[in-house]
Image 1 (spheres, rainbow, N blue to C red):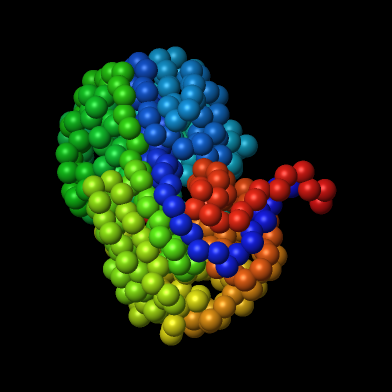
Image 2: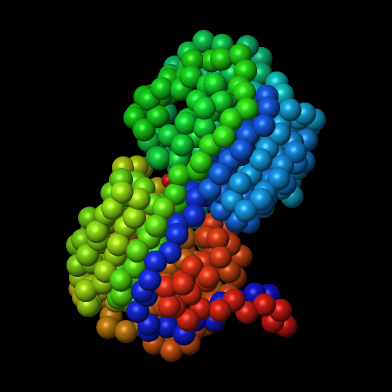
Length: 421
Ligand code: UD1
């Protein structure tokens, strides 16, 4: 059992690099299945979700190497079209393999990923998209299968701009004859990154970052190299920590424009943010001010993934902040853990009311999910005294060596291993 031991109440100072985006690298790795050749993916973070994705690719027959921050995938010989329960359950976003594998092999069967700790995560939009493209989808209650029956480009209107559904439709249509148009597509930067990767391999995708994405099917994709965009959620997490603890931190290797949806909240908190070409400097200015209202929305709205880390900072702001979670129905599980530190938060349905307190106090708490876990770490950094954070496997899914990055910023954080428990 590993846990984090944090001695809180210290300012964060210094400079740190932001690693590549988890939510980019996972669909890009799935997309390598479509490539007849070798893909070199740079700026990949070492995350447990990435390790599981690599295991899935190897299980399917790909040859994969991960050296420093470069993953090389040779998908020339794909031998399997099924992904078993163990692997699917390890990775909640594994449904992204459905479109890619079905397009590559003609059919694919994945164990159903099921619900997760932030909500049900239905896949109806993924399936409707694949069906419109000419795939027959079936389920036996445990597995979801897609078979290419009469693949052809078509127009698909998404009732909600789902990130995963947009990605699955792109992956299923890149090699499909004709033109596919996705209307009300998700506009997250990670979708543009996926499109840039695929286009570098010979795909013809237009309009990523807009609500209408068009894909002209091509016959095959060729070897390529690609650099993954920086992780905007890691950047926001670190900015939230500095905002609350005070200090002065440079983040390197960021895409400032991708942080725009969260910058107004930091400004409202009274934090100074200087934006460079690929850097962001965050300086705390004493006690934070409340943020009147945060509403999570699809990009370019405030990201649901940043809700928990920003909430952790607001626990010590002056005044009352109101946070509404519009994307996932069960994304306030971290609130019970923040309360253990002395935070004053009330939740009603999808709204959290955060009454800022002067101090948090060290305690023992656990990570409830990936971003909620980051919020708990921020609370421990703010808190006076010592804290122990358990269930840190959630954090390792999306933050590479978070304790090391925080240590570079003068935080007193240690990962303790081999505790008998
Ligand atoms: C992705 C991100 C996740 C982020 C989320 C929203 C990855 C690996 N994960 O998740 O970190 O929090 O985008 O920015 O990139 N929905 C349906 N039917 C569907 C699909 C989705 O009803 O078929 C609903 C979901 O229940 C949810 C909403 O749409 O309420 C958003 O989901 P979606 O955008 O699909 O998120 P993910 O792709 O799962």
